[in-house]
Image (cartoon, rainbow, N blue to C red; front, side, top):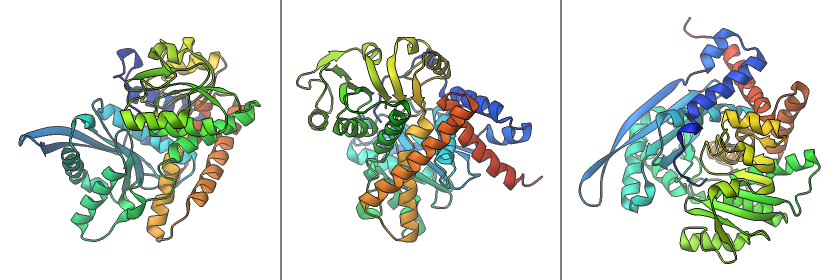
Amino acid sequence: MEAVEKPSAVQRNPYEAALKNFDIAADHLELDHDIRAMLRDPERELTVTVPVRMDDGKVETFVGYRVQYSTARGPGKGGIRFHPNVTLDEVKALACWMTWKCAVVNIPFGGAKGGVTCNPKKLSIRELEHLTRRYTVGILPLIGPDLDIPAPDVYTNPQIMAWMMDTYEMTKGYSVPGVVTGKPVSLGGSHGRNEATGRGVFYSIQNACDFLNISLENTTVVVQGFGNAGSVTAHLLDSAESNVVAVSDSTGCIYNKDGLSIPKLILHKAHTGSVLGFAGSEEISADDMLSLRCDILVPAALEGAITGENADRLNARIIAEAANGPITPDADSILFGKGVFVIPDILCNAGGVTVSYFEWAQDESHVFWDEAEVYARLEKIMKNSFMDVLKIHRDRHVNMRVAANMLGVGRVAEAARLRGLYPQ
């Protein structure tokens, strides 16, 4: 996922949005008071101070978080993001969404999330390593292969996961590859993990197009956020002969009505660090990009990109949420009223956590799969999960977000109900 500008006040607190969606699903499920009370707040929240000696010799302190929202269905699972706008409420929201996401794709994990408030673009490699290792020590009491398994997220990557794993193992004195996922393949990572989120988004779009009787060939696509998830999704859609006409990253937005060459754009961004200046494209504003008429819009940046302020200007037939929480609840109702088919985040971008589960399972069993097997297993899970959500959508006459939340919340509620409350 790619960073965007800091959300405005109208986009509201992401945790409030997460709780609102939980309440809507709980109402439809008619959850009783006791189960609601057990699921509505995180199990654990940890805030740590992260002092780092910078390259100039001075110590600078950062703030880090790790939140475990629910472990009713298994160990906590969720990414670590390094971003200037990280807050505790954002991490709580992301952990909440991860809880329902893992349940939607029916993998045996609970939901967690972490982050450090920093600007990694301004840190040297040495400073980034020291920040990562010190943060890992800070959250050490909460993580472990049977407790809580971190993974990459915004501005974190396989190298950072390798540093986290190494730091954890140094404290234990033995190899624990399952403590993190998203690490390099040479250290026990899974084949296919780097593409997993974007590939899961692509499979979700395929399923939606099949349901809506839309051919992917010649569909027009807009991708907001040309980071890992956005670029992989764009590349796969381009390979399926869709026409990607606009993309954006943290530096700006570009457009070509005849379509962008995605393989060349990926190389351009790798070389320049930006999508801007790509041959044959013109720069447009973020608002203009979101309002482009298209078949498929893929918000793949940060949360709160589509709000009640701009939702009415969107002209997409399908919105595939590659990011977490890109659409606020007030925008949801507007889009539903316009007949836009939204593939919600906890279903659409669940490919990442699904392949993270594959990686963890491979590490624990010491048996590894090739890329073809990973993709085949991922495609099967994404299709089955889409059909589970679609059934609720059609049977209960609710939008896809409510349907997905009902499926996820319902499965976690059932686990909590069966476990009971200890101690009484």
